[in-house]
Length: 333
Image (cartoon, rainbow, N blue to C red):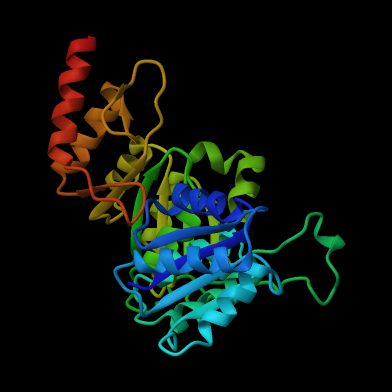
């Protein structure tokens, strides 16, 4: 896996490393190197080399640097020019979208150069302004074209696209629905062309609906629809070429869809928030009796569960989680 050095003036590199971990989970072979006021260029160079020496792969190294022309950038540039560092690559203007993108890209990349090329456009796309009309015309991002797989109003009912069956690249239960971890890590992992939030409540809440649609990553369109509509979509052959990520706020909404005929075979349990009456069974999952019964019904239907927040996490043991929930709920009763 490509190694990453975050280099900055002050503690910016340490802070963005922590932010990236909150979104993508803990990362190996990533180091933050900071230039402090009392340090000189040679001191920073020594810290950079020390950081690289701790990596498993010291050949393929990607440097994300805060400011082109500053001391961190200049020292990294000098190191890149040295013999033996031909596979080291640097990208300036470090921001959080750039870092999260790099974490995702290095999962399948063999070289630092591949990662650098892949993250460049996403780092630029992460810069935005609100209200949108304040953005210079030449800087305003173009609207992402609708994927060809998406059925449009002009497509007559009964038309069959693809094989006529919508593809579910991921189904996730998450109290927060569409947020940073989903919009970045899981979309990169599963590559959907549509994110569909299925919730009767959110579908009728214009504010939440708008916020979810705006949170979609570049190139992926987000929809918020009620459960009845999801059941209709799953049976509509016009969606046969669509790759969709389904997001549910609760396991109860998921069960309603499954009982309505939506063919879901695997579910990622990402987050179920704690509230009064619920017991905590993992760091991210809390349940009450209804939650437990609902998840057990889904499991009885043959649905498999992947219990983890982000791809980098190790999955929790589902059976052990359910045993713990059953025991603690019984003790609470």
